Amino acid sequence: MAKKQLSIVSVFVVLISSAFAQNGYWQQRAEYKMEVELNTDNHQMNGTQELKYYNNSPDTLKKVYYHLYFNAFQPGSMMDARSRTIQDPDPRVEARIVSLKTNEIGYQRINELEQDGNAVKWSINQTLLTVELATPLLPGKFTNFSMDFESQVPVQIRRSGRNNAEGIAYSMTQWYPKLAEYDKDGWMTDPYIGREFHGVWSDFDVKITIDSSFTIGGSGYLQNPEQIGHGYIEESKVKRLDSKKLTWHFIAPKVHDFAWAADPDYVHDIRTTAWGLELHFLYKNDSSIANNWQKLQGYTEANFSIVNDVFGEYPYKQYSVIQGGDGGMEYPMATLISGTGSFGGLVSVTVHESIHSWYYGLLATNENKYPWMDEGFTQFAQYYVLDSLFNRNLENPAIQAYKNYYRILKHPDYEPMTSHADFFHSNRVYGTNAYYKGATFLSQLLYIMGEDLFYEAMRTYYYTWRFKHPTPDDFKRVMEKAADMDLDWYFTNWIATSKTIDYSISEVTESKKNTEVVIERIGQMPMPVELLVTLNDGSTELYYIPLFNMRGSKSFNENDNATECSTWPWTHPNYKLTIPQKKSKIKSIELDPSMRVADIDKSNNKYPSANGSKKIYFEGSVK
Ligand SMILES: [Zn+2]
Image 1: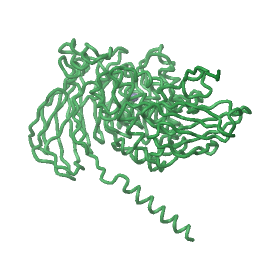
Image 2: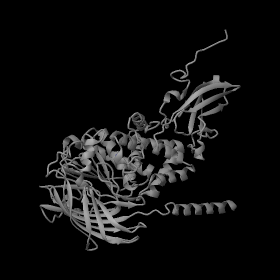
Image 3: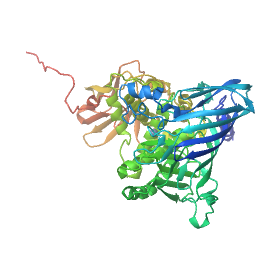
């Protein structure tokens, strides 16, 4: 009975602690209602925006800010200057903005702006619109903004724009005046220079009027398919109100952005998955790519099935893979990707961008501050999915991320992952940190915690923090609680420093009937150590040395056999392990047999060393 009472108490404690897991967390909310008309002759757009903004913060707001991203595509903009002066310019941008003509630039102009029917003072500087409120917005209250705006869609430079290299008419991303996010760290008003995004959790209601020949794909659910057709409904059921123009009505609930693309030559396929998710594919009517785009559809379904199982379930009823014609970029409920290229590349980019639905779309971290939390986590999951989709069964599917990380360490301008995305001195260092050091971060965390526990905790993280803005500490706390472990030492060293890992087997000596193995920590960053000892008879034993700072140990899966040793206080550079075997019986000893540790020098990880002993001896004897 006592035991039963105890378990009721502990269930209660778990419920209480999860209810208070996000004690003090708050986030803003918005409801967008937009009506726009895009003139496909001059590429200009007129629109209205009604925005209901809920202030859930404890602060009284006297100003709000909007991003006007299209203004970045003008000669002399911050994005133009940055693209030309960064150490290693992106060849897709470089000096293209500065040569845009008046009818090719992008712009967003505000004609009218009111708050609850009252005029407000506002000013535009580059990509930022600053609004001084007529009435301060108190905590717990909401206010209504109404805006009249006009835009010109730029010739495509990056991501957004018209008439890109693959001939897509309109890639409409970051295309509307977008309210900046305000959170516990304050306003996120980073001027756009071509990098990352952060947005307010919102409901979108969007009406787009455009020439009737265009097919639109995008973030929301189409509300009026019977007036539209274009593959959303059988053509025989369509009743169009106007033969020249169509008004497409979309709703996207609980998202933090809304993107769309339009082209008169899109093929539009819908595949409904076994569990009822509607996958939309929009691609150019071009025989050279159609075969790939049809084959892609089954892979996309398999991808969603795997990610649902391993990382948590995708909550929307629809996802669209759209040929946007420029690289790959993630948006809520949709991605815009390149349509040409190899089939493998097409699958890989679709897998990557759709996994952003989890890491970005739902776990909406501030990408400017923590780009590794969306790119790195996505990259990690992409390796997992591709390994599974193509039955590769690699020991460490993320191994390519480690290789890219090793290479960047030699870069003269290497920076830690904590640099703000915009401020990295080099595109290459930013990219490698965000994608590959970020993916390696998760892969090593799996090693530290144990595989089954790690994936379970990743799902807990997802269900705890989806539809929110988690930070690195929020993620750390979920993983720490799941593992019953302190992970400060790992997060801090890996994320905020450029310290590296290097362990070596420095001595193997016989002592009585035992063998003494000295392991040396050469790198500044400590890690738990795993050591595989193989005997001459082929039998193996895995020795596990937890790190003192972990205050816990790895959860090995049931069929893994590991002998746990005393914890290693990292302050001691050497650890002597006594193995109860004669040295003559030992065939080999190997550090990190699962290859999950980003050990920068593997030449010293094995006994006997492949290169012979690192220490060079003169074999002396008594004369
Ligand atoms: Zn990505």
